[in-house]
Image 1 (tube, rainbow, N blue to C red):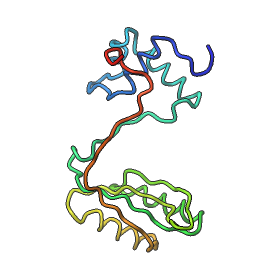
Image 2 (spheres, rainbow, N blue to C red):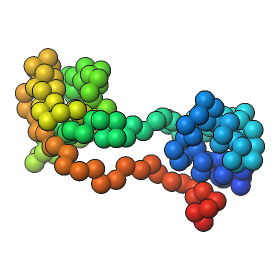
Image 3 (spheres, rainbow, N blue to C red):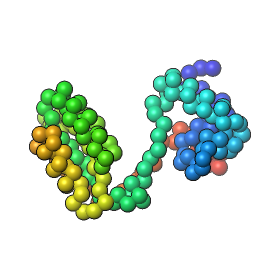
Length: 165
């Protein structure tokens, strides 16, 4: 089979696996039943795609606002030393209120290279977390953008489900 060419069954499995997982003790068995196959076929396909580097990760998406974390902020941090940025990022990523932490390239007009997404339950929680992270890491140059409203939170869809075609 040519690379990235999928059978009709594999496309059905991937369409179902790319949607919300069933809320059950055996979600992959549920996907298998809906696709017309067995659980081992589903798991073997996902393992193969992961091993081949086609799928980098397979994980849950937390709908943080529905879970009570309604105050959120993206924080851009300026860490001049690239080696230090990695170490600081590892410290920040361990914080329980950080869901995302990543390094990006800088630009002359935007020197910030480390980004975190902070979640809080109450107004001011994100500010307190950022201030604490600043104190604990020594990174004092940062910009915070508070979320006002969530407009979209969806995953990529590579194969439509049969009822969407």
